[in-house]
Amino acid sequence: MLTVVNHPLAKVHVTALRDASLGPERFRHHLLQLSRIMAYPVFSHLATAKVEVFTPLGVVAEGHGLTSQAVLVPILRAGLGMVEGFIDLIPGMVVSHLGMYRDETTLIPQRYYSNFPKRCQQWPVFVLDPMLATGGSAVDAIDYLKGEGASQVVLVSVIAAQPGIERVFLRHPEVPIYTAAVDEKLNSDGYILPGLGDAGDRLFGTII
Ligand code: PRP
Ligand code: URA
Image 1 (cartoon, rainbow, N blue to C red):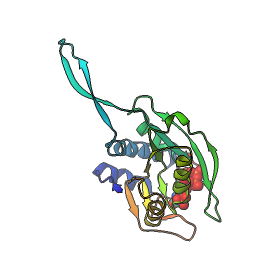
Image 2: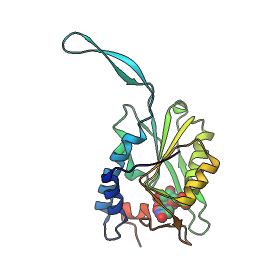
Image 3: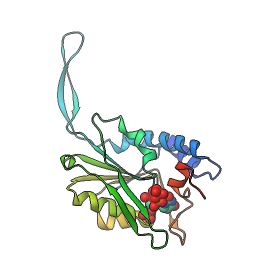
Image 4: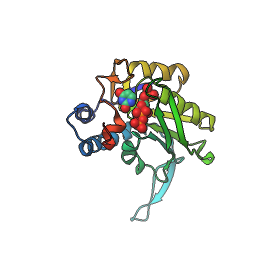
């Protein structure tokens, strides 16, 4: 299932991120604000169970507690810019970094770091990567996580290109995708059009 987060403020932040004149500081700011807005719909299907608490009036109030912890999997580098928007919303959140870059010529993702803890296999896993372009990186990340035993994976992007969405659903049809914008196509170098450019470079100021 594809969910496009259509909150007006999400649209404003995506527009700001697309603006080529935005420097790294403001890029980080808008990506963080957008991540905060997206976190609530992304977490809206978390399972809860009934709990009871004593209020200061000495009576019991019935309420809800989360039934499990959760795992964030930011894909390096650009996914790092989304972590702060999600991390404090769930107690005991685990952050399992996944290092990956696209080979510039073949566009094939190269994995260079991973550390998914086995004890998290039954927890919901949220993959964070602002850009879903060809879908190669997302598919490889989900393949890896499933291979490590992850049972529920959700993909969170900021801009998702149509070919990338189709590729993820073809291989992992049950994985929900959340995004703030759907762009139609890619250029011949595999960049999303209109997109926002290279998210990692814009976030960290490494533009040549
Ligand atoms: C970007 C982006 C995704 C990937 C998307 O990372 O953050 O991980 O490209 O492209 P795909 O859908 O075609 O696989 P990049 O390889 O530029 O690495 P970086 O974040 O370290 O710059
Ligand atoms: N990776 C990016 O950072 N941007 C794109 O447009 C495509 C892949």
